[in-house]
Every structure is written in structure tokens, then in C-alpha cells.
Length: 97
Image (cartoon, rainbow, N blue to C red; front, top):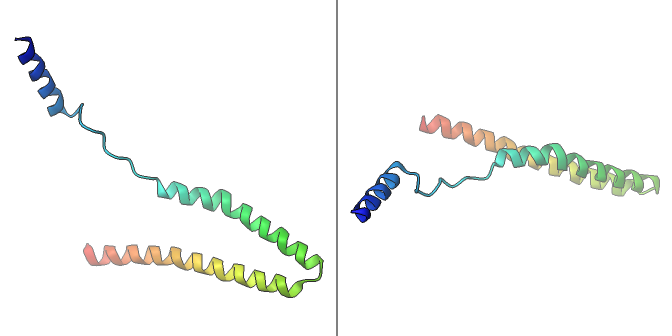
């Protein structure tokens, strides 16, 4: 009698979903990107600026210009990747909806 009540209670609890495994939680990628864009990127740009100013003060203008051009091209690639993300999202919405 006790065993049947126990089995019935467990079955009811499982049916309600309280013993079911919780849904897996994903990584908040938007929060990670926002963190990097607001905290890490300005620090890295400031470090690059200090390095460029230090080189320029020693007379290494050509190295500063080369490094600056490389940094600008890198930023252009990052901006292009972000643009492609939004263009891809637009194309997927256009095709599948």
C-alpha cells in the first residue's frame, strides 16, 4: 500500500516536470560582446596609443605610420565582420520568412 502510494506520487511529480532536468542555459554572447566593446577595446586602444606616442617621440615615425595603418586595417576587418553578421541576419529573414 505504501509502495503504491509512493510510486503514484513519484509518477505525478515526474509528470508535472519537477524532477525533469532543467533546460540548459546558453552563453549570453551579447553580454560578452558588450563587455569587450565597452571595457577591453578602449584599454587596448589606449595601450596602442601610448606605444605609438612613445615611438613617435623617439623619431620612429615610419614605424608609427605602419603600425597605425595595420591597426586601422584590423579595425576595418572587425567592422566588416560585424556588418556581414547583420547582412546575413537580414538575408536569412528575407529568405525564410
